[in-house]
Length: 332
Ligand code: TRP
Image (cartoon, rainbow, N blue to C red):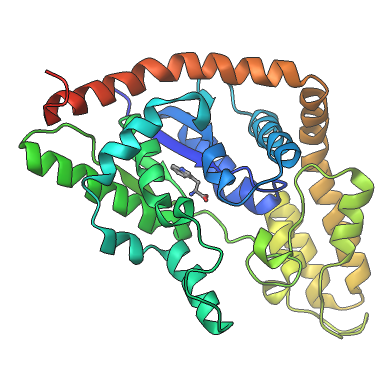
């Protein structure tokens, strides 16, 4: 039997190439050898996104993004979290096995408290219960589908470990394997994608290259990459240049070697290097952008694909909840 891989993306903003190389592409690679279940974590987004138009547009944007990146809904069960009501029943059940102290230690919550403290605010300012209990909802997403492996970035590993703790606490209490214990899958070969300013590409740093921006905007964004003050004639070091690190994601080994040689020879200015990067990025993103635009032109089709995915997902979810309910004595 194939192992089960599951992951979700929170629809809180425009997809960028960090999402693509960090989450989407590795997850689609895993789908070749695993039974994959990939979803849009829309209730996770509700914690931050309170504008209805924006939220519904972002949900479709992320769905079209997965599809334009090559997700085949015939092979991958692809759905919205909100279409699986069993998620919320399982969340409540898992709450009973989750020490509050563990939630106090969750990175996302701790970071929010720390920020409040640094600003001299009340430690709980702006923190809703959705953020505080986030790891339980995420554990329900994972455990509901008997996931073996959860491909995520380093920042989500702690949340997956908490899900494993919850499943183990349940199994220990009932002395049987009621719930599958998941594992985080952080692939070693997933590159950290540098942003425009050289820090990790992240929406919260405002340094992203959007995945589906029109060609003109893509070019403008790439021209904004921060460089040092080396002149045109000076030889340059490719390995410390985020232009080159980004180029590596989009070019063949031969192209990379040729570009590195131009860096070292001198005579290539940063403007030229950015033009070269733009051409390589655009060559890869153009067909994806066309696919994305075609999908976005027919939102009803996106909704239909997600609804069909939910139909396949729900029986799996219902079986897990039933197993758990029986173990607890809630269901005779
Ligand atoms: N918390 C994840 C993020 O912010 C999104 C997510 C929600 C998720 N539920 C999940 C990821 C379940 C993996 C498995 O990126």
